[in-house]
Length: 216
Image (tube, rainbow, N blue to C red; front, side, top):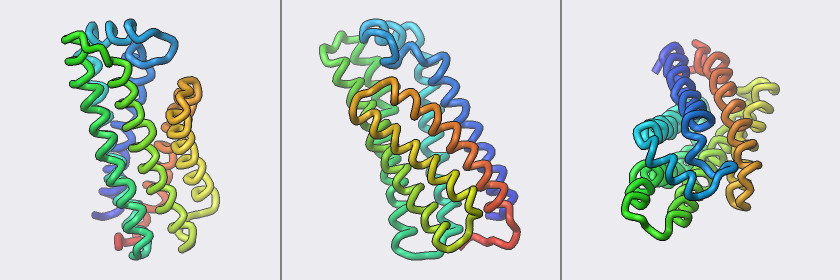
């Protein structure tokens, strides 16, 4: 894939991730444990099921988009076992992330409909699958690929630092989910997503769009 096509593809990925973030921060917010009770969240999901599922479809596309971006990023890294490890971590992260999004989209609404007694447990399971496990693997893999690019002197220093900050904020999100701190979870979600999407655009323009760099 040529640099121009990689650039356009990255624009599309960033657009989808941005749309998913805006849905989560706005229309979907009532379904998350941020200042509301379990019963209120479940009622919100029932009352806004179409919107709720549409938001999670965007997050499913975002997960696939992130894997695509990291695949393009890995193509700029010299072949070797560490490159394979980095991309594998990202790819493995897809599984728990998509599982969580299926739980949020379909299983949780069905559990609400039949009056299941373990709604909080189902909600927590989905949150840990996506926010801790999937997100953690994404960011570990992405950070490893970035460190490899730094080692081979492919990235300018400010781009390298920006990338490490972005991946670190993502790992902060996983840590916040692990300790159950929703205020920190919300903070790291917002900052990590803003920084990571901006960094993706920077990479697209400075790395993917350079005619002298060909995918490995």
